[in-house]
Image 1 (cartoon, one colour):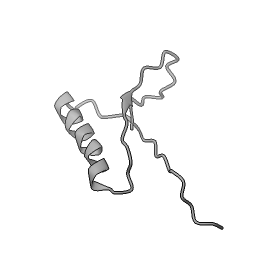
Image 2: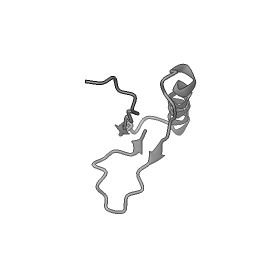
Image 3: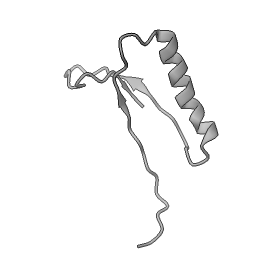
Length: 64
């Protein structure tokens, strides 16, 4: 098998506990985004919130 040189994309679906404050959530997101500078093989970081009108999120509110 030849050595891989492709890109691996990781997707993380998250449901935060109700007691997580908006300030704490912002702190967590900034911390995750900072990994791009800390991990040489990490090329990008994207995140968003569920905006599905189909309501198929199964309770997950954020995706990273």
